[in-house]
Image 1 (cartoon, rainbow, N blue to C red):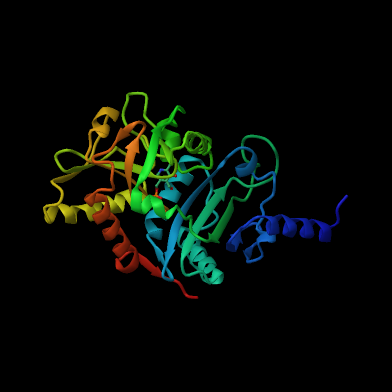
Image 2: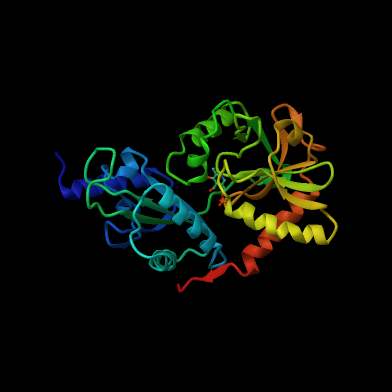
Length: 320
Ligand SMILES: Cc1ncc(COP(=O)(O)O)c(C=O)c1O
């Protein structure tokens, strides 16, 4: 039997064993923000834990400002509605809590991740009558990918795991088992990540990032968003790519179904997401993409996106 002090000591010991860089955590269940990682906990019977009845979303902190939070929050609200999750307050209140938690963290570069859960109360399937939804926000050091990804590009494999059915793929819920297994499989086989193909043979997405292609005719093609997550980074990159059309580097930008055979014949392949930004894929299974080196369009899009993250019109000042 453990007493309160022993539990806290155990939680602290657990955190000391892990190289965590969590700097602030808000929990509606605690009613505030904590900065001690040992206290960043949720009840085991929260339905997000034992039934996966929860959703999440993200945003980046860049040079002391939050990038593209509103697009991510819009997607969060859509995920909540599809998952029949109640909101803990208005959109404005949630947004404000995210900004305040970021300020409390003092972190000027990193990641924000926030979750909405059906709340605790029992181990059944449907939420407990009258259960309060749980709202959690974590501020942490951003996900870092190897520098080699940027310089040399990424190698992907076609996953053997089935793609999620569209409703679950377009909802950013906490059921990421297919995504996790895909990434583990890829790493076990010596690749950097996997790609889902849907049952009609069209390209889907990667584990926590979208994919896009530059065709032989210099058209940027992104798979349709009806069976994959609407990546906020992809949405923004597709807008920014219009500038490359104006400058003559691209002929067009399209959102369309793309078969794996068409995709493999492309000049460039990109992975796109909040954590990876825009990165070239140079190999898919045994096939080299283009000349097997990062291409000019992926470099140009990465640059446009990085400028947008530093000085575009989608930044929110954090009141540190
Ligand atoms: C399955 C999946 N697809 C795509 C993305 C890319 O989305 P975003 O650009 O909003 O990070 C993510 C990341 O959140 C994801 O989890």
